[in-house]
Length: 182
Ligand SMILES: [Zn+2]
Image 1 (cartoon, rainbow, N blue to C red):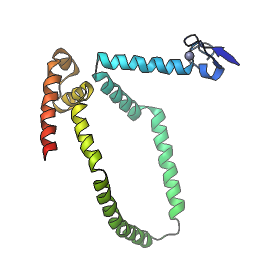
Image 2 (tube, helix red, strand yellow):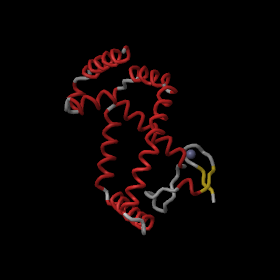
Image 3 (cartoon, rainbow, N blue to C red):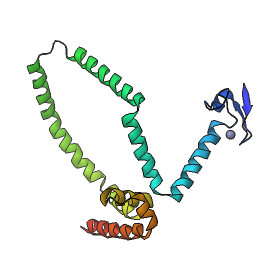
Image 4 (cartoon, rainbow, N blue to C red):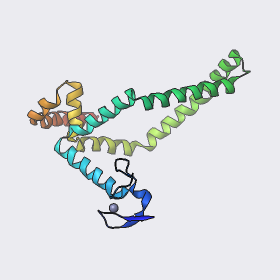
């Protein structure tokens, strides 16, 4: 079964029109177009109010911490893990377990140090570039987030005094330039 999308005019399979908020569960606009709309809307929203990006992340975090769905998922994962550990470690004495953990630590210590050193060397250029980009990309949303979290400024206060963003951006820029010089 196919349906023609009201937005892009392309005929597509009916699954692409799944929409629980419609009466029969099938909408008039395809998934691709809907996603495009949503992205566009989000982009405009963030442009209008840079702190929206942060607010939505906060809201998502709050949702994850309070929602029953996530709670159930966390609990079932915990249960599975404890069951799995019980089976895996059955018949192994406490001393043997500790011994294994100690040996594992010793075996991996040198390997870890070696890997870290080679990673550090390999990625020096990347790291410098990252530091440079961090200076260029001091976006509004990031600055607003810092102002809110570090100085406990309210979103409204920042909105009423947009020059704060400019000022703090320059402060951060100076700080980072000094750091990069070293
Ligand atoms: Zn479409």
